[in-house]
Length: 119
Ligand code: 5GP
Ligand code: ZN
Image 1 (cartoon, rainbow, N blue to C red):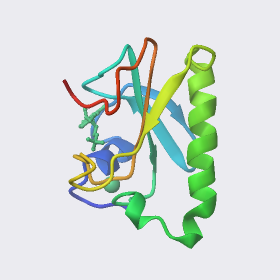
Image 2: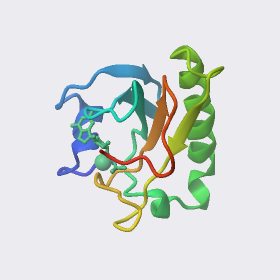
Image 3: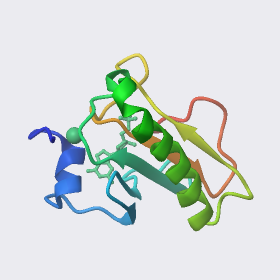
Image 4: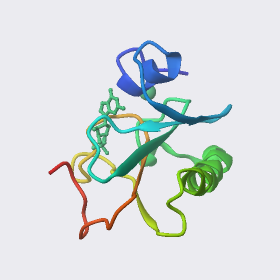
């Protein structure tokens, strides 16, 4: 299911271009358009979920895949041994700007103090 006015659903559909990093049946990963660290990737489910708050019991497999694949992508990007930060912003107090669940993968240099936001 996709949401017609969702930027990330449009990226999944190929209607908006992205610098793709990884894709499988469940997930898509691409570089953030406004990186805050030398490597700043996003990992999103292809299915439209508005936020982490949308995850239900039936999505447990998806949640597991999201984390495990993020670790895989970090290894592929060569930042696993130096380390990285993963962030999921949820809702307005969490600083979520795009209403499609996504995980930030930040690395390639020392990530600043919590919480990294667009400087
Ligand atoms: P949020 O604040 O919702 O956690 O993060 C949304 C992220 O999506 C931001 O870091 C922003 O730079 C990124 N973003 C927004 N629109 C686009 C886009 O069209 N393409 C890409 N690659 N990233 C986007
Ligand atoms: Zn969406």
